[in-house]
Image (cartoon, rainbow, N blue to C red; front, side, top):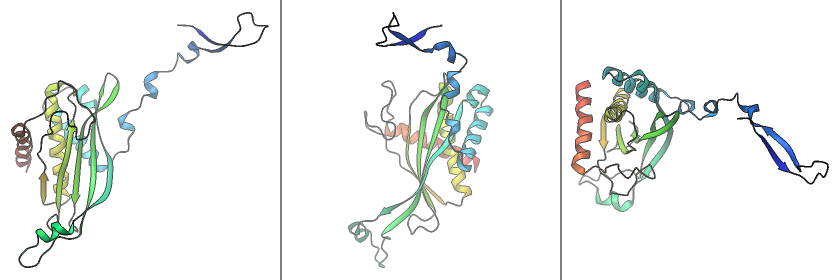
Length: 231
């Protein structure tokens, strides 16, 4: 389409009182997708690369298409030090008979891992995982322990048959990574949200079901079963 955009002027020598601004065909050679933001432009990390390779390998072994595998991008978008302040009342209540008390604070590293999938040419964030890592320098009882704090998703992953496989494999790959880094324990908070509540994503599709406690526990047990199979 060839059009000329104009703006009005007070120039009496111009009978139409208009001045050409730009011709659209000047920009017709530009591909709109070239300026489209891509999740792959986010910085990579050894953790995100490891998880992405594991997930794509799993998809290939399950005979999903190369298009599906190549549509996935996984990135760690947050990696920061935090600490839990222990209230004195809690420390007193949990004191042991031999006088042991909790430390005043428990330091940890919090990481946020996101899964993107390219759908109709646009990268969409579909899955989010928050983990907290308490290393060997953290006082007991959290020494060498990882905590799966939050996960959240929206059910737009394509194809639908691969969705659970991908989400499970992200969790399995992270636990493999934690094991390789000599973490000894992993805790998972299994608490389904109430209908209408949102942990991470601010809204979800109306048709997306909220899992019951039993269904969510079964979902996590399937992950642990696969972890045991992999050793």
